[in-house]
Image (cartoon, rainbow, N blue to C red; front, top):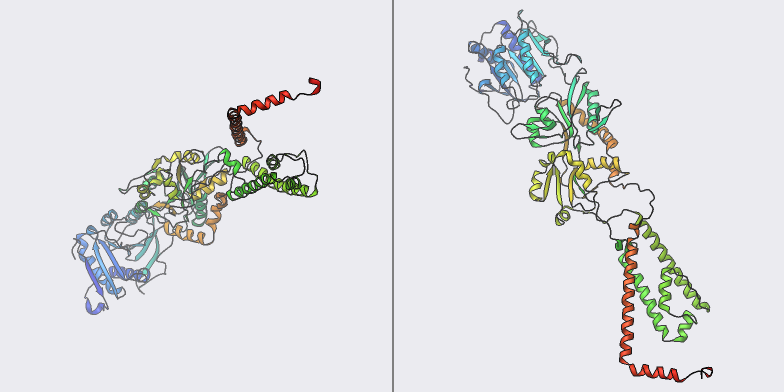
Length: 633
């Protein structure tokens, strides 16, 4: 077998080592082969049917490796497929190598493996087993473990033999205590007994990512556009400290995984990851290795998942639109609002019929005196005065007429009282017209879509459809949210619904935001760690448990209660001001204008009548002048 990257595929159904191969190995190599085969049978074969083996062997040890590997596959259980690859010619494959078995002969040969130790070639969150066909010194094993530690791979074993020709199994525990959190010193966890051809115990893998021994975990906290996931507060000394949903979740994770969270505050947004592998914001800090994880209302996105490792989604919140509260009612509209259009029609019909019958009864004096009473003049004025609540100076003398009047007064009293009470409540409230209810309605009214910068990549596809949009810096998000409270603002602001719950809960005594009933999408919210971080598996496991037992929902409810989405600000009793009676003033001037028109019409009618019949008017005057009283003669 040469060292130029030849790939050999062995498909083995049944192999009898005594008949098929005639290989003579020394005792220590034979022990190494047997010990390695036992570990492979214990750790890999129960879950894999195909094993890929990567090797990095110098030329002088190529024959030794060939004999060792050939003997190795005769001992490992059958009915498996094997693939062996030279590390120099490794190719990127879609289904990453999952067995992570590596043969080396020295630290120098492992350096080539270390150069390829990334997510393009291996599944880094799987167990790595390094098998050395030569003796490895402690310093050499430290160099191997250092390579894995820098890549956040701590599930690593080394099988080698010592000067006493004893095969041993080594690993490392980076987290010893809170002051020793990157220890790469090899620790022997098992030894092979050549006399019985068995390991001394069944300890081949030690779980170490569930206890970090109080070591620090640096968590980048985005402080812009991240409420209620990340909230900045001042402690008793006046220094900024982190609070919020995601901080509390990490505190719970810290209790379970025994690490000390160090929340690093960044006065910027969560940022973005670009397709070329660069980033900005807090996610950029994770990409550069300055922090271990990022929090701050981070959604799951493809570019982020390419270069960082995401956790299980801890929540899903709809992406909503903050909309203006609706236009204010006009002054005249407020006077008409107490009754619906149907009620106004009925009241007008009743008024019309009562006036009509009153005019008809005027033609029949007996019926008129029976219904309205003798001496009661101007029935239309009386009907209007009763509607307005004006007291009647003269009452009819007959009982029937009084009963009719009493019924009409009672009817007008109920209508007038209901109207007055409703008008007062309307004038005292800040009630507005219904806001927009759908995205189509928003587009029909040509509202502008306002999107903060870090969210623009999330809705990039939507921006093509909504051409009337504007992207603004993350730092201005609160300014644009408050613009939706202004009466003349014609725009909507993208925001996550959970953030609106929190803001309404925080400010409900002063104001509340209104969101559109129609949502865009429902993204998943996750935490991002450095790529292939060893804690991902443990964190995912605990997040799933916390979701199942309702702990995350309980934590979220402390900061963002959904009931506050529909709450209105508390309004203290108000004193009526001039603006509250604008409608009445407008109605007064309108009635005066009508009165002036009627006055002009009366003058015009009298003038026209006098011009049309001048002789008649002259005769009347002469008659009046001729007939004089006796005392005047």
